[in-house]
Image (cartoon, rainbow over all chains, first blue to last red; front, side, top):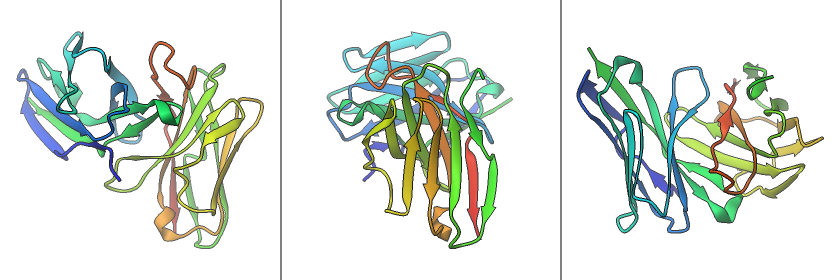
Length: 113
Length: 117
């Protein structure tokens, strides 16, 4: 069963605008959430994370928001750049499973000039 | 090396043959994870190592799949009697600790693309 869900397989945004990628989860035991970025033929690379005790974490153009009551998180990229075009995976850490990461299916972001 | 290294990068095998996939984690990383990504799917957790032991094997899809780790370093994922549904990119990741020490950022290798024909 998919415990981390990214319901939008793709998103297209114009350069300079905001990209919002969404993620929902079902397991209330998850205590840490991460976003990974993946280019074709490369492994995923870590982008930004947030602990379940916070509701916002910002790093440059990237901000992650966490709504625990809704079991929802989102990644905002402002302003979006063409180099941001990639697949973005949402992941949640499960302390009951060695903190192994549970991943969503990914959202493919295309930033157009 | 500086990052997680996986070999081979590509493997084409005939149905029914056994394959071995290798992962060299970042030196000093005690936690090692195997994932696979089938076409159009997300990253599917397979197994987790803390040191040389595997506390969580829950993601292994069948008894044809096994993994070991030696010297708290290299790990090998073995798939016996491969089937076409085993075709996927197999990704290895390592992190400093399996617990939440400064976060659970895991570093991924480039993966092994396995094609079973």
